[in-house]
Amino acid sequence: MPVTSTREADVLRRQDPELAEILFGELDRQSTTLQLIAAENFTSPAVLAALGSPLANKYAEGYPGARHHGGCELVDLAERAAVDRARALFGAEHANVQSHSGSSAVLAAYAALLRPGDTVLAMGLPFGGHLTHGSPANFSGRWFDFVGYGVDAETGLIDYDQVRTLARTHRPKAVVCGSISYPRHIDHAAFREIADEVGAYLIADAAHPIGLVAGGAAPSPVPYADVVCATTHKVLRGPRGGMLLCGSELAERVDRAVFPFTQGGAQMHTIAAKAVAFGEAATPGFRAYARQVVANARALAAQLRARGLVVTTGGTDTHLLTVDPAPFGVEGRAARGRLAAAGLVMDACALPHGDARGLRLGTAAVTTQGMDEPEMERIAALLAEVLAQGGQAQQVREDVRELTGRFPPYPARQG
Ligand SMILES: *Cc1c(COP(=O)(O)O)cnc(C)c1O
Image 1 (cartoon, rainbow, N blue to C red):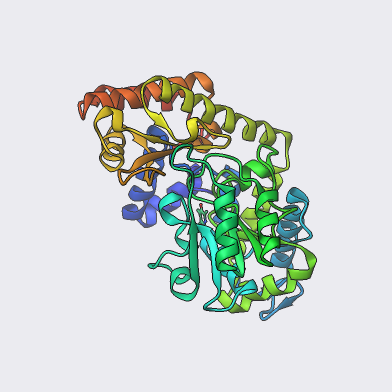
Image 2 (cartoon, protein in one colour):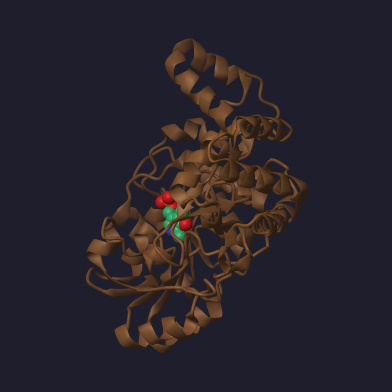
């Protein structure tokens, strides 16, 4: 059923060659360049099949057993499976799997616990806070009064004493832990203690590490946070979407914050795909995957350091790392462009020191492709070569093609 299979591909090609060309061009791009964007991954053909299924046709406002539409018997089973699997996977009393995205999940968490005008303490955006952590361009910055904590300028690590001091000064209604680029484990117990001291809720925005948590490769925020928000499409390798986890006492508030407060009809094809992904994440194979994702990120960090890049915090505990390419005389945004032209696709990102931007890389996608430490060494060498050459990277593009050719993300596909 996914576009990676021949039959569906033929249907699309016949009916709409224009869109078929775009879709297959994108599949080719993903297969022949290195996907090092820390938030990306390759979902399985089973997840893609659920996403492309007729569940996409079904309206299902409400929750299983309490819908505003008829004909929901089967999609109810899909959502119940997704909820049960999420609860089991994360040891959570309650799960809501309807959020359309990670940002929607954060919005719902705020809606469940806060009122407009409340003070919220979260990681500042220049240090790795997400848009939903108080950006003036986002609902969060307009509707709430955000105070930002940073990281230590020397070590790049969260300064828990600073977080505590800010909490005591500003008395937030909620403390948010979680980041788009923090490469180390978060001390959830420390955040819980700080939140308790000032009577604040603790919201863990685990959009990035939740897949590592599922695979036992990162500490879980579930025992500590009042509400955990997450995505399902990053390391977790499911469909693009969000979810929330909480204790039974907040279950009803969280559910009402998702529907009807911030969303309408649930996307049942995506929820079915989430159930498939949770099923995959509960396997020993996924645990091994999560461990390898971290091993690969550590190897990549060490190899990049050895080649002269400055690695924030000196390394990583997770799937992502941020590096400063300044020793090569190039800033993050320009470096990103050069690297992309050579087939190494990643993000520019803020760095904890100074104004210049760095690069953020992740190993979730390349690890799904089956790459291990030797390939991380190769990727680091190619990256350093591009930065050193300053644009003459045609040979690297060929080398990337050769490397990705040995690790096809969808091996069974027949164009
Ligand atoms: C990715 C991310 C989100 C948002 O996810 P979307 O699905 O893009 O809306 C929210 N918070 C953090 C920390 C993230 O990394």
